[in-house]
Length: 119
Image 1 (cartoon, rainbow, N blue to C red):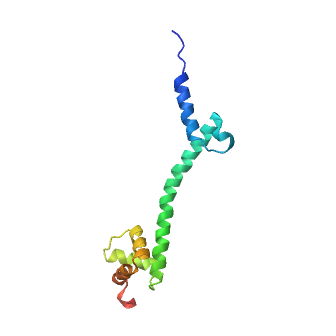
Image 2 (spheres, helix red, strand yellow):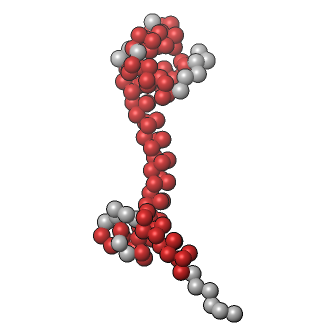
Image 3 (cartoon, rainbow, N blue to C red):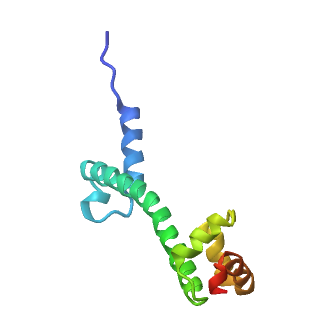
């Protein structure tokens, strides 16, 4: 039985890796062996960064809400606690958007949440 060569399949695999490595620094963008390592590492970094992006945005929303709530003489933790006690189910993304774009609506939410002694 004649030997089967992997010419076309191998070439496709190499082309795929080299296409992904385009733009990488130095040999990582030109040499196959270095490119495979670079592409694998890039994939790992991309995966981690997708998770970090969610964390970073949540952090940003919390900072924006905290700034808006502090201007209305209330702490962030008491504000969130008041939201839960008042059964107001608004996520932090929406709260941050309301705080930035529509301060009067945010004032109404704070008025509902604020304890009676502080009103």
